[in-house]
Image (cartoon, rainbow over all chains, first blue to last red; front, side):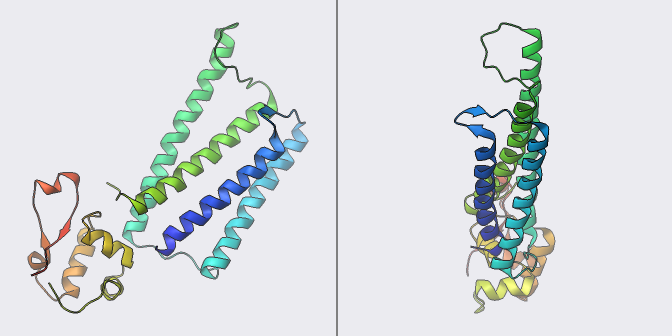
Length: 151
Length: 69
């Protein structure tokens, strides 16, 4: 396993840990907890800080703080994973847009409802899309290292 | 081609990781032209002696090191 691949695995685990913490602050079961903007902002700052702290710890523990050495295959895999992340985020944001429009245009419809006019709900879904996009990127990286080669 | 180089040795000579050399050998990764030339130079052999090209097999965009001889 190359150092770049090891980094992909550990950073994916870190991402999962941060998302677990995030959802603990945002959800009560499957319900998004109603919180004022001030608390949401605190969650936002803490989530960013926690992610950065874990990345720094991973870098220090695994590589002594040095940058991960990458060759052309590493960069090709990274580029493909970034593309997958971008595609995922575009699709996910468009789904949210459609969802918001359904709410306004098709009042009383039987489709699953997400109240994006509610601030905590909007905050949770936008952040969840970012988390999921990052997860797609890191899983793509692991997949490409393990099984395939980027075209 | 057998010249007593390990994958790690070759990787160090051409500025790649050993995993990349493994992927190239397995036909899972098509190296850039620059890396392909570096590998040929590491073996001190002509490009054609190291690399083969079969259009049918290359449809998937993969490169291949020539088989051991």
